Length: 511
Image 1 (cartoon, rainbow, N blue to C red):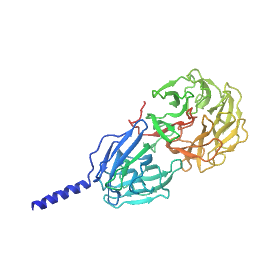
Image 2: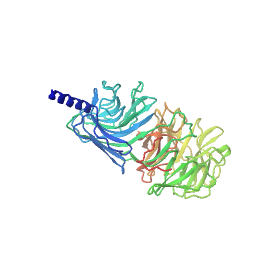
Image 3: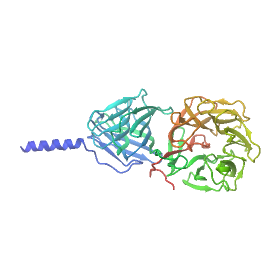
Image 4: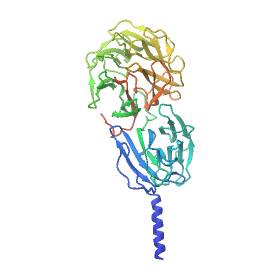
């Protein structure tokens, strides 16, 4: 009888263990904690390198499949809509072809919990996997694309969309059109499973972002969500958040000495010291309602700014010393949005609305008569000189979608450079004259003549004369992300703005 009681007790203990987790730990980077889920034989772990904002996660476990799971989980509690995004890379060749890594959303930390996972296997298999009931079977939607290394998982109104890409390419997506069986209050996070109880696998996660998007009732240009300044290294396409605030900052210019960024916030321009991480307001005199169309002269001494000082608050153009001072009005009327200096400092090009048509204009930097350079029907915007002064790059809607164009400095030989199924805005030429970066909006989200806040966007780079483009950043942003020239002087880094309602103590936070 005693032996029977012992067996029952042992069995009860083991059964309880199936639904338990190993001890949880405290916050790691932007995550609330980490746990081993299920009866794993080897304890997993996660570390965060704040210098490069990279996570390394290791874990064991027999599988994430069927009726229960075993893996290591780095998690955060969430409610409402969210966008999860990261770049993923396994460390080492691995043992099992079905080792797994990715994003996971769970209703609990129990081994048999309902879950939905954006998964990449060691074999390259890429799939959306989900368990819709506690202890139920796991189902799967496979992608044709294999070996994805950029993974995004979005929840919007209870519907989940998984988007994947090879780094440098645009996303392909799979949607789970079911009710939100997970409920609103969930765990979200990164996971790894070795698919072998005796093996520990490792992976690195870069560009880890948990985004809370703008609420449905947000009124554009009246209400704002949080902003982050990021520095993107084009060599490895890893970005680092260097500053964030709970409302809007926009359009960072990189100064010619490489020491500062200049951005706008609440009508004021700021110089952000990269060494100290502190912003200082720039005095622009009467130009006190500055927007995100501001540009630094090639010699680094002057700013052209756009400020709502015109009739009925219309934007007009000014110049002001880069260190601050009294602004001088350049454009006699508005709307006028300043975008580019000529390399010799003699001219400024801008987008102007004259008689209901937005076109590219040139004006002497000291003031004088405007010269209209484009006359196609529809919006022409974002003009910017090449470093050699021979060309002006701009974006135009004349072909139906917004695309990148180039013309000679006198306005002749207007040539389309991009021709794809996206809306492409604000081409910026690298200081070495070799590359163009521009922002891409999705045509099913944005009308061709609009570049709003708070959308899914790409930053893409192509050769200066045109040619194949590659994605260098996957973002939630839009208006204010790169409206102005944002290349570093070394042509190897970009400054940009991304957006989220959720700020993280792991990154520098301003007021």
